Image (cartoon, rainbow, N blue to C red; front, side, top):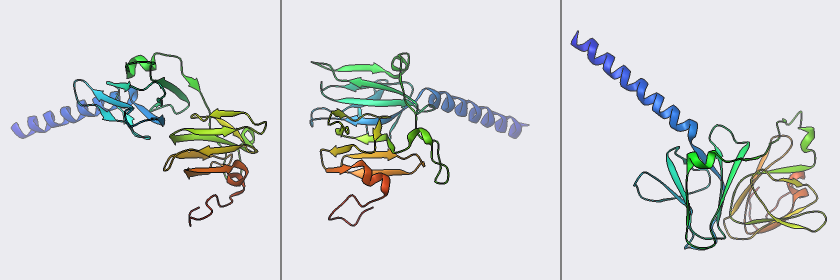
Amino acid sequence: MRQFLRGWAVLVLLVATAGLGAAQAKGAVNCVGLYSETSDGQVSYRVGGGDWIVVKVGDTIPANAEIRVNVDRDWIEITPANNPNAVYEIHGPDTGEIIKKVPDILKGKPRLVSFPKGTANSPDPKFKNKLVVGKYLGRQVYTTPDGDENDIKYGDVLDGKGKVRIIAINNTIELFQASGKVTKVIGPLNFDLEKVLSGQKLYKYLNAP
């Protein structure tokens, strides 16, 4: 009987832990875009009274965390862990720092984005000759076919006749094609998007795809 009760208690604990984990995952967010201009600007998060943890692209930030941006030119883009098509952006303030709790961020109105749903045999016609921005690190500049320049953000749809400039070393960008293929590009690099669409080599001196 004692063994049965002990086993039952363990089962209840496991179920409760799994429920808590599911609740946390439901309200958690993923970092999909990040730009920090100086060594003083480190976008970070913490849970409760814990230490601040520097955010990296791809990190999952817990539902009960708060996020801090402390340089005015820095920003972070996050999506709900269960919805990559809704994106929230947090910019640093003119002075001081901004701290926001994840639940409060998610109460705001997101920017809605979409990604190709095609395959190699059946590309998504809505994204023909276009590329969609996935996760990125650092400032990236997109030049349209008309010559206009814009900072690249998560979910941006880029015309295949445009150009991209990755400004700093080791900054990265992921580009989705209509076929669902994803190309990850590492900077610094200036390149024509047509080269990505046609599968051409982007790096002149490196033996990299």
